[in-house]
Structure formats: C-alpha cells, structure tokens
Image (cartoon, rainbow, N blue to C red; front, side, top):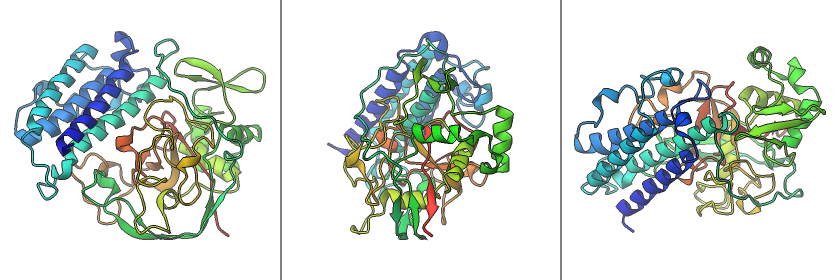
Length: 433
Ligand SMILES: [Fe+2]
C-alpha cells in the first residue's frame, strides 16, 4: 500500500467508528448535551469536520471554508463547552453532510500532496493526516464520555465480548522496578503530538508499582474502610471538593440499599464486579486511595518507565508488548464498552511485568501537565500549550475507548483533578525503600 492509501484507510476507519457510535442515538439527543461539561454530539461531529477542513483542505490547498459563518462556532477555544448546548449549531444530519463534503475535498487535496519524509514538516511522512485521524479518534472518546452521561433509555451501544480475568494474575502484587535511565517521549516524524516531544533522556529512581490497575474490589475495601470520610487521606483541595460535591463513591455508582453498590452503565443498572478494573474516579479520589494503601500515585516518568522501558532492547517500544498490534493484548478500540477484569491480558505485559498498562482505563499520575524540555508547539499552539502548569494532571495508557491510532505508551492525556467523566482509574506506587 502507498502512504496515501494507508492514510485514507486510517481516516475511513476512524470515520466509520464515529458514525457507528452516534447511529443508535435519536435525533433529539444528537443535538442535546446531558451535562454542560460536555458538548452536544452534533457539535463534536461538525467540529471534527471543521478541524479536517482547516488542516486537510484550507491549509494544504488555500481553499475557502464551506461555512465561513460557522468557523468560530466550531473553534474549541472561541466556543467553550459551557455554551455549546445553547447556541445554534448544525443538526445531526447537517453535521454528517458537512463531514462527507469535507472528506471528499480532503481526499482530492491529498492526491497532490508531498508526503516524502524530507518534505514540508506538516505533511512529511503523512503527519497532518495522522494528526486529523487522531483528533477524530480523541473526539470519539469524548463522545463516549457524553454518551455515558445520557439518561437511561437514550443510548444502547453494540457491545463486544472481553476475555475472562484470571484471579491468579489479577491481584495487586506490586512489581519492583529497579529504575535507571529512559528516553522519555517520542521522536519527531512518527505521528506523535507536540506535547509528547521532544524525546529526552531522564532517570527514574527505584520504586514499586501495582502489577494491575486498582480493581473495583480493592476500591470497595477503601469505601468500607471509611476512605471517603477520612480527611487525613485527602489533600486539602481534594477534601474540599469531596465535601462540596458529596462524593461517596465513583461516578455512576449508587447504593443498592443492602450495603453494596450498583452502577448505571450506558443507561443500564448493574451490580459492580469486584474483579473489574476501577473506572470513573477523579484525581482526588485516586490520590486518597493511594494514600490509604500506604503509597502514592506514580509520576508520569515512573509510569512510562514501567510501561515501555526494556533493558534487553536498544530501543524502548511504543507499546508495553513491543511493536505489534494490540489485538488480544489490550482492551482498546471502543469495542468492549467497559474495562476488563484484572488479569485478562497475559500477552500484553510490559517488560517490567506490569499488566494492563495500555487500554482499559487512563491512569492518573501525580504529575502536573507541563512541557517537556525543548518543547515546541506544532503545528498549532492550542492543542496542549494553554493547559501547561494550570492544575491539569497527566493521565496515561489509554482506555477501552481509545482507538489504536492514538494508543501508544508515550501519549499524554490531561484533565482537571475533579473530573470523573473520563474513563480513568489508577494504580498505586511506593518508594522502593
Ligand atoms: Fe478538537
């Protein structure tokens, strides 16, 4: 296949996913948001098209936008989420027509593009098409967060099966990690986004890390032990948030009236499964749980070291299991609609011995989102730079809702410490001593 054919297939694969995700949703809810922290799905759809039009049509060919009057509406900074549910936006049908029309123009422009590795930086090796595919995949994950917040009865996803967990492999059983030097981040020319670059050497001190992410069962122990009511476990900011929000359990959980918990999951009520990997907790809850366990959250340096450092290989791979595809090795790709049970992917272990480092849930780290040394915003400032040093915490590893185009061990996600709609969980770290 040519580079252009590979990129076209990648763009179309992500587009099929986007349209498949919103297909079960009725027209009314395509245009409404269940929560002002999220956008109406129709806004995401037209924003996906506007971004593609900007980068794959206007920037590459000099053509004018199809809807000049809507440019500000679909600019994420000029129209923040809080107002997207209140302004006039394209409806679901109009948004899909806009997506189709832009895609046709983008593929025409692609025919004349210079993708040679030593060509212009924006198009070298197909970078900008990869960036646009990743952008759409990231919005699909955001769409899933919105769909998870929809009222019961509005959304019934088509769900794929997961491998069973293995109790013998699913325990916490901390791994000792000797530490040492690592080249953090990604080199240029490989589809990585600006905040993952530049690759830079750093060292990590010895530490211990949970072999598996924290399960629902372990978090139930934290709850039963009074973790949500013990101020000593929480930061001052976290405790103030917990009290003002009245948080007693992860998002979407409800008491079952008999001392246990159920949860609402894409509109259905179900018992919580103790073996499943914990999801929908804030950074504050993760921090309190880690302190309760006698440890702390890992830094993102420690996380990346545990996920991809391979002392037996000259180049640390992009995935914990090496360079191959994730099939059978991680719960990625928006197929399962839930995290797996701990121990479900024995073929996906990192060289460190840690499991589930990719997929299932994003993992909160203790690191505040900031630039790597030598950072250069590219190709636009607004992707990451405005969020540096502004209280956002780094999340790593992707979730079940992350597609393979955006799944790699160098990828950096970030969110505010109180956010819980993200498909996020945690694992505990301890100093080696
Ligand atoms: Fe966006």
